[in-house]
Image (cartoon, rainbow, N blue to C red; front, side):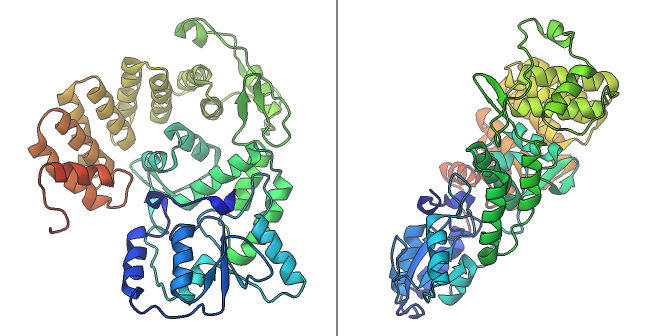
Length: 437
């Protein structure tokens, strides 16, 4: 349920550390800004857990309650997770509050930011403008990296910027896409979600690209779902055209009868707007490959990426996506070769260099791994992930004295990322002072 969710501080939009500092500063003589107020919360808070928020209500003279009633005077809407139930409807608390207001009950519904202002907890939000790479989002949200890339290619999420092909995304946009896809897969309809978003919008402001993303999902331009019986539409639950599984070798799979007509039929089944018997382009095969990767049809994705490369052999991105798929099948050497092809066609492909380094490290080819990470760092010295991977590789090589500097560089360039705790643990392990201690 939306109301019972608690925020993991590493994913929090508002820095937990900055919140705690403000709380400590106000703890001795907290202003009684909530005297006479009975407060409850709905949705996931970005600044703290519901338990911490309840403690703040009490310290400011109010009374915190877990449920909505006619005695409640203030409902606070969390800004990290929308107050929506699994069927896409507004949370029970929000629906009850709307009904009470229509009945003339003196109840206010406010956003989390407004509530923080009332209790004078002036927390700046350093994460709002923060951008994340696919690998960082994968760690934070527990999503496969290839799924994040598929969403980008489908247009469901958009990179805010790129540095040598490396995309940086808004955390909010990716979490919005994930939440919408989860709700639709659970059976929520586009119409219900749109109504709920419009209601939530009244209290938490503009929901970014949520309506556009919802439209894309409902038009089947992104996620479809697969179960034991094949693919289905997460909104209507109708079955989609499913390709038969292939059991041959890679070469046999690559030569399997799968031509433009097959691709066209599959695209029409998920409402892609393509003419009958189109001339299938490299881009078409890439999109189809990403769609198949998204629904865990890795072998099908590999065939599509190979087809794209037959049309455009110099497409670095196609080599990269093919490498990713080969790696997911456990074919490390084949994946490594394709990542190397990617940098042959684009020598500044940051993610490819990093993946090459990681694969060499897995294969225990230490010097080659270090060379790859060094290449990434030379291209983009502030690329935190490359510093972290190099540090960890040096650590495995029993060279902690060389690794220390790269853990430090990682923290200098990304002091709130998903590997911060690991970097701090490593530095502490070797007695390196942290934060001037």
